[in-house]
Image (cartoon, rainbow, N blue to C red; front, top):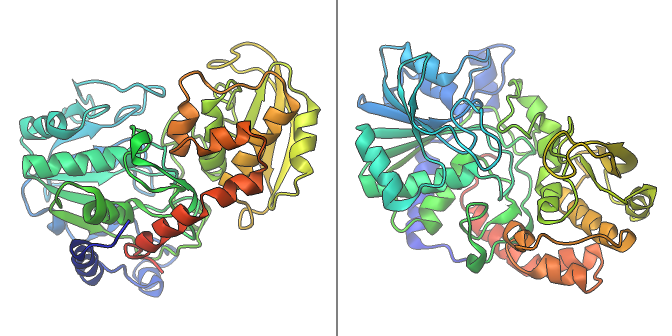
Amino acid sequence: MRMSRRSLLTAGTAAAALAPLPAGAAAAANPGTRLHTGFERLAEDGYARLGGGRVGIVTNPTGVTRDVRHVVDVMHADARVDLTAVFGPEHGFRGTAQAGGSEGRYDDPATGLPVYDTYLKSGQALADVFAASGVDTIVFDIQDVGARFYTYIWTLYDCMEAARLAGRRFVVLDRPNPVTGRAARGPVLHKEFATFVGRQPIAQAHGMTVAELARLFNGEFLTAPVELDTVLMSGWRRGDFYDASGLPWVPPSPNMPTADTALVYSGTCLFEGTNLSEGRGTTRPFELLGAEGLDGRWAAAAGELGLPGVHFREAYFAPTFSKFQGKTIGGVQIHVHDRAAYDPVRTGIALLVTAKRVWSGFAWRSDNWIDKLTGSTLVRTMTDAGAGPDEIVAAWGDELEAFRRVRAHYLTYR
């Protein structure tokens, strides 16, 4: 990817106008609370950034204040903002739907506001939804988990493009990347593998916040820029894990119960592309992995690799839904003991390689879903050819470095 003149102008303007407050200033304004989210800063400013028009918000259960009031309820009760519509992503606005589902069109019982479904809508079809809602400004406030295949960032992308087509302003309220913004890791999507789990060529673990991603999308990938405003956090540092934020963790989706889940997800979600369970239907999804016929040999093989920051425990479990529902299966539980040293993507690749080596029943999903998750055929074909984890990781080095160079222009927090 190449940094365009338009991108430089967009990035420069946003950085100058929307720089976050220093951490010390945030602490002085509110003793005992270092981080302020984008929503908190928007509300503290009397919602002036929304321009006084009719507002719609794209959000889900994670759009909450630190005392766990939903921002829709807060805004609806505040005369300073004219909130007239809500837009729900995958899993829905109130979060009742499982993976691959949404809540449809309904009126929210708590506020009476119309809730529109955005899931699997894009382009002009989504622009028509925005136009029909009658809003002037569209706000985005959803907690991301830092992985390319987590669909909310592509809801962000699709909504930005649709807002441009509908002639609406777009405002992104920033929240922390729960697994830090220190580095981008993993393979970069190849455009021929673009789907809703990856629209554009970014790294598997992107290491950005949603506001930074919005600026990247606007500068590099949208057909033309949307009128974009990003309300940044104050007091967030790139090396912070989620527990440093002081914010409550609300599951962004039914199988993302804790911030620990987010820590491993960008690597172990790859098991969705295999015939092994990725732990759905357990209390530790994406930390428990297994299948019928697997035993302690897998944990032993993974442990012999000496991967930093992680231990592997032989584990047995019975998923209550999804793969192997109601059956007791064997596998591993991932125990991260040094999250600063832990590399989730390298660990995920190592687990794929060792699972294939120790279990004769290993198979990829017949639709080659692994190629869509990883963004190319590289991981599947190299694993099948007997390559080791380090060899596979090295193979995407050049494309990852190219993405990192572009990414650097849009990083706001230092």
